[in-house]
Image 1 (tube, rainbow, N blue to C red):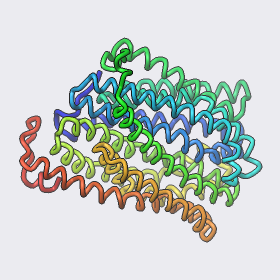
Image 2: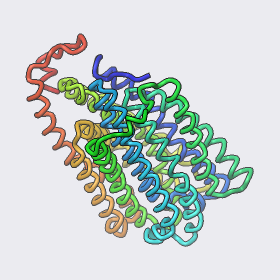
Image 3: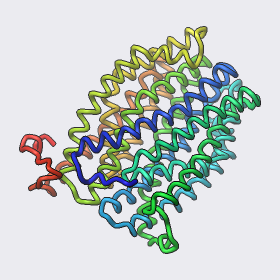
Image 4: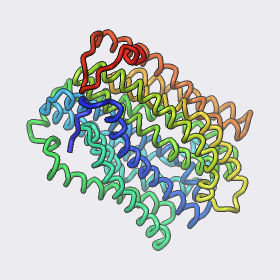
Length: 463
């Protein structure tokens, strides 16, 4: 079920690898969308705002788990690209060890500290109880969340993006059924939405382990695979913790921004929550391309296919920028109708505020598309410092908005927060890619024909 991304036409491979990722990320967003629709319609706008007020903290810890999972999978992809299966299995074992520690940390921080963190963020008193309940229940299932993301990332590192999609679809369907049952039938409130997510992910983890045991012999770990060296553990920790930290830095910026939005009142919090849900679904294709590039670049780095890396990034950049234009236009025109799914037709002020957010952000998706593509590409090449710096740039931009511009500009300040963060993060990433590109040119000064696809001089020069 694994797939080698070091042979074959680069763009076709990237697109075919991205499609299951895209569908998977859409279903991933449906977790949040389903919860928000059910909570907003069956409990009320204040409950929806409570879930939204907890969103930054959820992103802080769950985002760390997702980033760390993607990070520990990079050594796995490199070893697979180099056809070194013993080293690959040791990388998986090292990554699993790191993931266990992360799950324990998230559980302790999320269950014991959520109330304090919500207070620091200035969460409105009317939303505090529901927001704290949602987070406490959600982080009680940290083991399931981390395991789900780790297994999906490792399977993708072997070039298989379809299997994680299958289990994500199963989890999404289960989540949809359970959230309606827990809230609508058993009246469990916002805690029921969090519990539905945990149960759905736990079931998917069990199914994924069964599949690995039966159909993916490359990932069956034996006793000797757990005897990884300190260097291999350190490599997994470096990539995992660094990429997790990148996501957390971004989330801290989002938390600061949420602090500013909380000061604008319940309507602003609800509008931001609904707009963010729609926005996250819209940018899913762009994020999916980025994830695909990380695996593609890592495998080809392991195989020392330098020309393939350059051409893959160059051609995919044009593809993803065109996609960004289409997505931006679509969200500007139809986004308002999607917002109404969350809040109903009676909340005109909330809908109007969300519409402004979507139009501004959608217009600038091209910047975001390049950020996703280049950040994941340099990570695949082994550069963990630059994406971390980009994360700090995002933090600075969101903090500026949350602490200064919202006070001066009100809702307009919140609207421009994300585009400012994208520009700030893209600057160091673009510089790093330019440096890496020159190095790749030097290492592949005389590229040979690759997979019956011989580059012309013009294409080589452009790439």
